Length: 194
Image 1 (cartoon, rainbow, N blue to C red):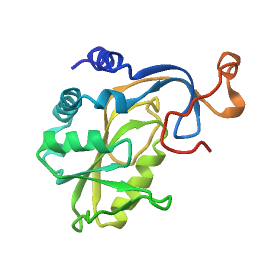
Image 2: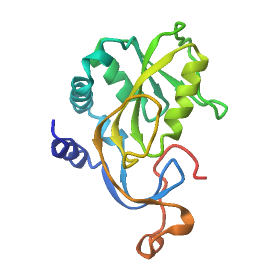
Image 3: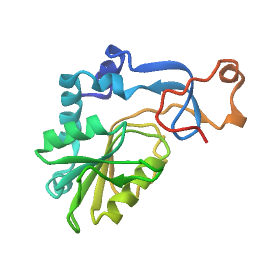
Image 4: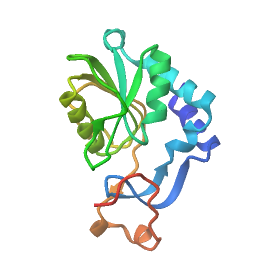
């Protein structure tokens, strides 16, 4: 799939929103990708995951032993990536504010992990999830996501493979452009704004 074809999938799912949004990072933006909508169609989710898996370098793909995703946004796409790779897929969650493995999930010492997100904006959630994976004994060898919104700025410390990169400006609350400040903000994400 080309980047245009991936964006067409988002548009077909009415998952590319325009307005004034507060992202999970606390930054504000005029566009928001609602990945849950694009992933609600299992065949679409499977196509997107298969496309991303095929783009992973074989040297990395052959070392992955398990897929781990942060809850909630990454669970569906992580599961589809696991299915496409033929590997187990589990998730970390924040019952008390810090990511951890629960539900009987565990990692073997040194187990090679592909971290899978839906959207990476600043990389904060990814780095927090990677910390939990390390504490559980896993080793993240690469990260992947449906969308990289970081404009290439998110440093995850491992090779990072997004399906698409989408450069959408984001702003702190005190530096909003007038046209964005004039629109009430919506918070479609999963974390409270800073």
